[in-house]
Image (cartoon, rainbow, N blue to C red):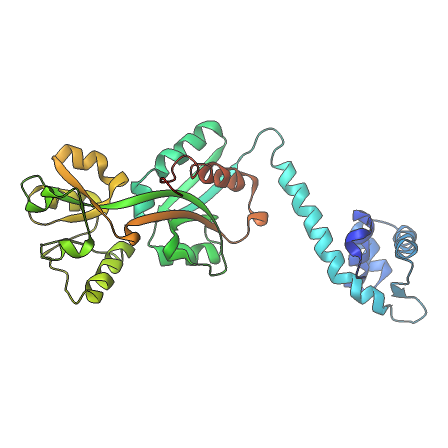
Length: 310
């Protein structure tokens, strides 16, 4: 049984062998597969001749598998499942791909380019429906692991390796948005520690970027100074426009709003300010055809959006 990959197995014979093993009876296996007992027996004999070893002990009153049969059974199940999955995937393409893909994404990904990328995909595949839900990163990982969504999109630092597979998607860069009369606008680039002397806008709701800022402030022996807390990047931009604090937000997600409010964007030079988003899944091989197509469409955005030097 060590060289199964080198043996050409007949799908039907393997399926019938599994039925015999599970039913422990030729008669019940024949009924289950809507065949005659003689047809089942002939298929088994042909399979045994093919592998050159007996798989079932027919000399006993109670049918039992031989040691070779016991060894073949789990491999046969795996092969049949794999063949069935391929058939199901190919059938999804008949008459055009159709189906439903569930995606969970962080607010940062949704505020960036994800909605536009999904919309472009759906224009190309009008028979595919995509559900997009905003969740915090820990919930995204849990939803993908538990199979409640097909794909997750989040910052790579929040996904880790875990038990999920990931592919790169896009990148964005955190910037400091300030009222044009704020003194920090004299600089084009600043370190995060340079912002700690000023009032900052605090983002509620478990935003990972906010947690990182708190950790960096502690490491610098400082505390975040803020008296305004909001839940969205748009709200943070409005607060910055009113001169009530500095907003640290993704440049790509805030570009339109910042321009509308006349805010100045100052680049953060810290390494963690460059965020790489990934698409995560449990197993690419188990994705439906529509989910694989969406995955390919999203991952293709990486090559056109890498920063210089990557």
